Image 1 (cartoon, helix red, strand yellow):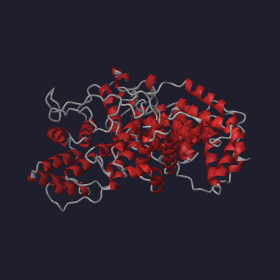
Image 2 (spheres, rainbow, N blue to C red):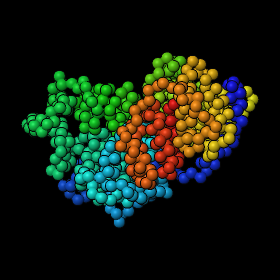
Image 3 (cartoon, helix red, strand yellow):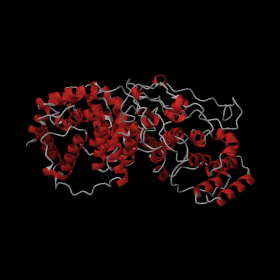
Image 4 (cartoon, rainbow, N blue to C red):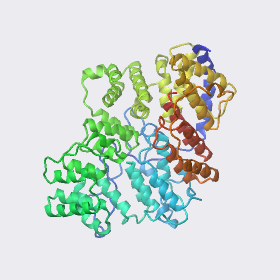
Length: 631
């Protein structure tokens, strides 16, 4: 089948599929509200008073907790980006602290406290029904702080914020569910939602996990003096190595030689002598100019505060395993403006700790010459890295000619897809994409614009580009192939299967083969992914057989999740244990990312979410998987 024939076949029912998309979204629930994030500013959370402070005293030397930030509209006049079940930093929903209705569920205590009920996107008051308390604790602790998938990251956020009856049974002996949820939000860099969760829980002060969250947030925010003012009281109640290390750090800042020597000796006696970077930094802070940290496994809040105090540059290798909260602090803290902060900002955005608006502010602050901007596209294609992405963003933003803006955006999106950084490109360029109106002269941009808007969850805005692709393909115009390229997304979004799916599938596959040339196996892999994703959503392509793909791929698949986890997910879904099933699904693919997840496991997770009644989450994950597969 020829590519032109494939385009005509795809276009023939594109209009009908768009109507199906609209019907599918028409009955969807309203997006989940999210607290406004402090755009590009240091993070503060409401401090947790240590147990020995006088009643009414303000921890940290009387500093008042900050007021909630007002929602910030992105450049281009759109609403502020939010994370309501949509890709972080890309999709947008109203973000207003006033819109969040706190449900304290006083009858069941602080463990039940949450910010979201079922009407607001929570996962239901019976979230933990049937799952033992100790298992819930272990699964929450095992959740990765960094989840590369925006859909799964948002699902994790909603689970952590849900008001729900606590699980039954004995605890595992560690922190309660409120503390564990708060700790995970802090690790994720989601301090705004952490504030809301703390506001929903009365009497939350005085527990070690929560106290540590407050201290680490202040360290990230550069408020070391406030931490040092509190540590004397805190260490009377909490005796783990963390508190001892903070105390010795504060003593080093005060140049208390004897106390530092005694504290270092005690830490070594207690088995902490493997943390070489910590002791090197203590030496540096005490004045040893030869003490330099050249290697650091991961940047923790304490390590970052100590590096800053020692006036040393954080090794870039430390960024690889840094928690999202730390990356966010580097992006907007003392390191702001450096190449390191730019890398941190991008990684923080990919991990959900910074919004697209915050990243745009950082990109806007990068100094570029007129010559760089004039040759932005060629420079970005020659050397694609953080600075290239800044160039493409600024070029698209400053262009006043629609075709020139569209060309810059097309380059930015295409390069990002090839580099597995699509979420980043959509997050930072979404206002510029939305500012363009579909028109015949922009037909060459129809497929990229349609794909990006669908990925961002902006289905209504994508329809115009789908319609443009349909019209141009009928007229054999510049978007003759755009309808074919967009057909898989229209199919994944459609509410029902269609009798002509097989023709469209074969037409899309033929067009992909014509474009790919010798990369036929790559096309086969994409075809298999599309068939699998449609089936996982409960809408298999009618008549699109797998037989021709049985021997198509010899690629080594990614590792499957551990068998017990896999069996546990299936059993939890079957028995309707929603919270347990969601946690197991997040563990199955949460830290891998779309490119590294086993496709069989990913399809099973999508099907599991659908069977749990989380259809919108399943669909968003399928869209991400399609983009990740190169469709």
